[in-house]
Length: 366
Length: 186
Image 1 (cartoon, rainbow over the protein chains, first blue to last red):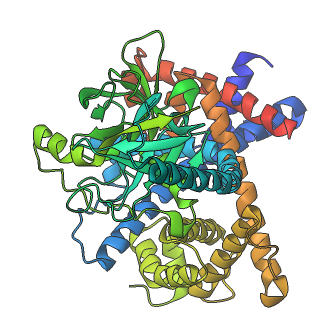
Image 2 (cartoon, one colour):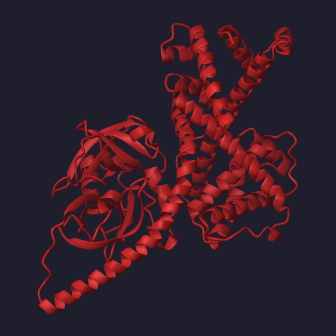
Image 3 (cartoon, rainbow over the protein chains, first blue to last red):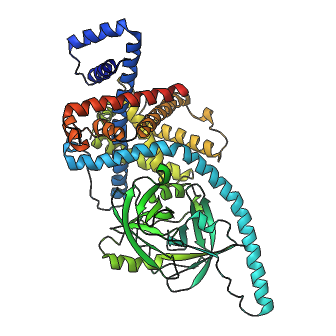
């Protein structure tokens, strides 16, 4: 088909759909369509494509609104005051508003498409987890028994084993749940976390999901608490916007290290929508480090870095983390903090508060 | 407040927030309580109810649509079906006991249409994604963000709105091709 015909027919389909086709144009169109079956087929395909685009836009706007209505309803139920953003169509005309919606819309639409497949995949992985976990638990219990026996026999503390791999983890709840990367704990014989005060505690894997590289751990001692109170940070349920300023705290060495940067791309490695691409320096040992925004909300978890570049880093989004956590059985799931108490603090104060809840994850492998 | 379900649905079909919020406030707690007693979490309930609201929203937009029961009854039934489907998928429960559900096939039909629709738009999205820039952003700006050709010309660096318009139709040409090829491959 000639380009002019193609453009003519596309424009006609759009005019018909938006009610802008005059009677005369309609008559011309009809006679051309009747005379040329190829043109008629193209017309119907354009009509279908354009109307799908229109409906898709309407649907994604409604989905965003639904999520907002949900938050509002829940906030009201909990008696909390919340800034309410109304998605009034007339307001959409204002440029600033349109820009913010634009971002949300594109994220949502990308998400829907990527989410379909992995969801079932992750469910399958989680089933695998349970099997392997049982084995893991059995060996752990066995080892602990052995260690105890050795201790009793030798009547002396067991020699401190050298960790041969280390990453970073951070708390999901004050009672000992924490998150790190799956690759940090993969193949672990035993796992120790080291907290701010330098003390080490044994921890076990509760669940993991290799595809998105997430492992949920819990400190074995149920009396363990990270800090004095509930976690000071909350988890951002949506993706952080492109360009958002972020910072991380991790353990590339024995001491905690601070780095700052920004969200460089809404999607991560090879367009993975479960990740962001960040511009922030990161080194070995920082896998599993929290990524926070200016308000002190967790927006992601450091996962990997580009080998070619010093500071191109990839992080799993908090959104994906929250989604995966929903698949964990209720009795093995941490109670996530609901309120963010870092928002009004200076960056230095935020970092100080965070250190109680960020730890080194030391892994012993054979 | 909308006095009757019919008026409420008419408003809902336009995407009105107030009507949506009214339905949400009134019916979400019931679904949440039921799901929690059935072993689901609050997050499950949120997902489920929002999906059911999408089903209702699409249904309400159909001019031939007449609700044969109360909105609450309908939403609750859709949520139940969605949940049992999810359990079935996760194989935590063997099968949905259809006999227990009156009108089960009617809900099944609605859900099948809903699933096909979701797939259709996922395909469209995939096609949009694979277009690359600037086409992807240009089409989104026009169709999703209601930008005028004037604004688009300025934002994308075209000398005038007419050039932007030609570019938009060229992008549309490529989108249509990818979209229909993908459909043909099914």
